[in-house]
Amino acid sequence: MKKIAVFVDVQNIYYTTRDAFGQQFNYRLLWQELLAQGDIVYANAYAIQRSDDQQHKFQKALKHIGFNVKLKPYIQRKDGSAKGDWDVGITIDIMEAAAEVDNIILLSGDGDFDLLLRKVREKFGVTTEVYSVEALTAKALIDAADVHHKIAASLLL
Picture 1 (tube, rainbow, N blue to C red):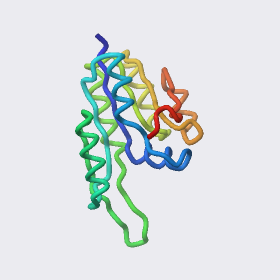
Picture 2 (cartoon, rainbow, N blue to C red; picture 1 turned 30 degrees about the horizontal axis):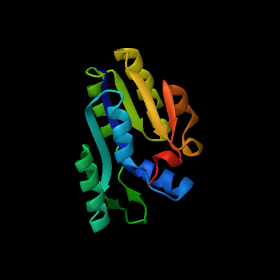
Picture 3 (cartoon, rainbow, N blue to C red; picture 1 turned 45 degrees about the vertical axis):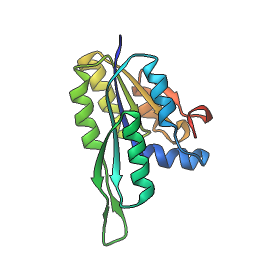
Picture 4 (cartoon, helix red, strand yellow; picture 1 turned 135 degrees about the horizontal axis):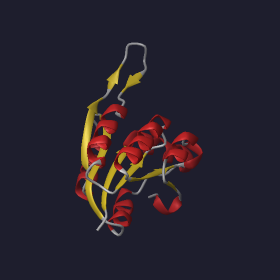
């Protein structure tokens, strides 16, 4: 059975599905689809820790589905901007998992991950897949993946 590792850039998926469709992503349905393809051996969801009940409920739901939820503190800068980027953490986890799985699945439209996907395919021979909102995804990321799955109405709540 194929071994699958799933990595979710939660903020990216939240904002792109909200902006493109006005809806939220259906993580439970994705999980069911992936289980039909193989054994999910890693499943990390990377999010920003905020102190509100809705976020806690969402994180609890992700854990219930089977995701390991990794949180980073939300940092509000003096100039009003915010910081809470998981790119390095996601990259490290993908590099470590790639040696043990057949398939890397990334949920993000962030073009910064294009080099990562190329590298893990070259070094470990894994298949790379991306789930993202096509119109809000860097072309370089789409081109770097073996398979690009367009998030559409069928994967939304």
